[in-house]
Length: 443
Image 1 (cartoon, one colour):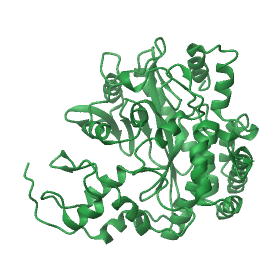
Image 2 (cartoon, rainbow, N blue to C red):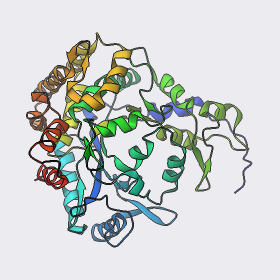
Image 3 (tube, rainbow, N blue to C red):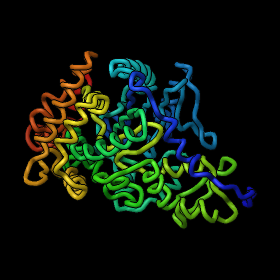
Image 4 (tube, rainbow, N blue to C red):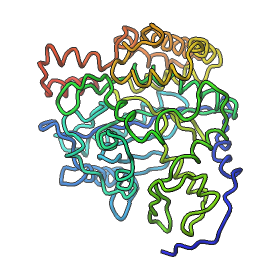
């Protein structure tokens, strides 16, 4: 590979366009989910490997052949599938992520996801299950191989933090994506989504049992993110202050770089420079392109990530239609001005340090965490009620997706609370009963 490039200047205005091109008229707003699940064996409870006759790669091959999807490859290894705007991709530990085209309604999202799931199940070995759970219940990272994707191997070697390997190989989450109409609207939604994030993490906590034991945490997935490379995780920006696209870009540019791509191959930078320094001086004969910035932004993992849409990333994988409750809360609040005002009023007395404190307390305590002597389950109920009222007023019928929370958040409980109670009583710490419970949730 030729290292010396003709020096070019990446214009900051070109970077800004990555965000402003997302402006969408409110009547055209859509919503999307990125839905990760953990592939396990129903007999051994171990995470299913990428390789092997009954492995995840084999499932992708058979699914593509039977449903006419295209392969996504890396060095001739299948790392995902695509058809139009829908993708099935793999996370580092072979977690399966389904990302479908944004839709106007949650009904349409569910219809598409159900259809793809049915097709996936038909090609999976009968012993394999995609588990709606936030962390591997039995296998730990030491026995989970990273899939053959060059980017993941570089990340595994670079990312620091005592639980970065857990995050990469063991965890599964749900991400929700929403639209905005202007920079002002984007920043308002971005700040509110960040403020809501610890409450949402608590409501959907669903990863207390890991490695076959009760960890004592409601969301071990959230704990693993809290202990992964704080240069690029957590809150991006001071969410209680004024914020802009330029401020977000500054955060990305001040983050150490992991690698860039040239001629289809990664060039490792190993955190030696920030993107800001790369913009000014280049690096060993390489100079920045817009694709370099996009990669740098994708290698930052804040609770809420800005793109030409807003990606909200902080929820454990859940089932039993709770995954659609995640989307329903955000759609109800973020697409209704009055609902946003109510949430802003609800949270106005909390400062940046309060949200940071909550981020550290929620993984262990979930909805029983407190801020200013108030249990956050009371906030959670009000957040759900605000979303429900807005959805009812929109007259789309989507408020029904919040009904799955009636036995959880509306009673001050998360899925993890139910699991921990059963685990330590009627289940007698039997992993088979946990797996059966999680499978039954989706019937």
